[in-house]
Length: 366
Image 1 (tube, rainbow, N blue to C red):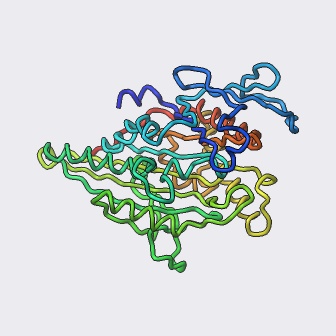
Image 2 (cartoon, rainbow, N blue to C red; image 1 turned 60 degrees about the vertical axis):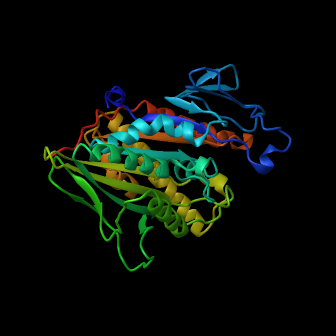
Image 3 (cartoon, rainbow, N blue to C red; image 1 turned 180 degrees about the vertical axis):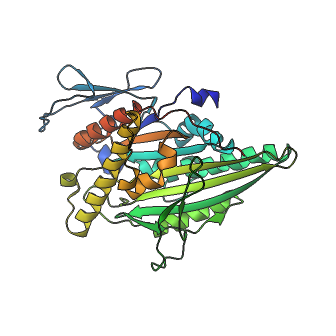
């Protein structure tokens, strides 16, 4: 954990997905407006090829020449990177949850930039392409096997919910809408815990069970079409694994939480072609993402008041955003040139997040 501790700030990984299907037509798979200049994979250069109404001042990115923007993150994954390579970079973080830390990994980006693929994997199961959630759980199961010989016993409790139009829906329940889900704070002042009322929690004991839960959840998720993507998810989903460990020799106990969050698409209203109910959705999404941004800025500035309660998302994740956690954000980026503006917006947001120091995480041990 010492390696993680040196990085008291929210770490940000940027991932550019490959061109897919029809996008390959006429481009033979090369992405002309993006470059990955350094050997350490920490830089991304963006170049505006055609001047399609980019009439704004560029504050956060370094401008190189007229149309070049340079961004630096903790890690940049180019389109050739595999799910395995991405997981390799976060596996230490996942391990921290076993040691009793709060860990939060979330994926941010416009619709169709590869967030759900990164977090859950493809809709048709394939071992090479499984996402961060199943890989994380497998890793935790494997690590606990080694610790059992040292007298540790573990219990794993999984829950999966989505926040849609500022309402919480239980993704593992049997879809009865009559149950209300509220966020409640429990525990003492210094050890506050966030819980959701009437939420289904499942004791997980095997890898297959997790895949089953993911299948059930994605079946229940509110997916509706926007102009940006037909498989677009219009809700934030939060997978939470609570890990409770007790050592029967030393009576030591620790409780860790792993939160894996797939945020709703971050596109601007005018780009998503949303009307009516869709419009309300996009406004709710934009509101919760801008509250997320506000909260992160407030923490970075060490403000006295942090507006966690302004959105369900930040209220739910407050323990994972404020000092007591290890937080990583994936910013997922589309390689399509017509998404240039959204890509720029996402990378700028990610740069702000990257500069935010949330303090050092504490371990929860009894």
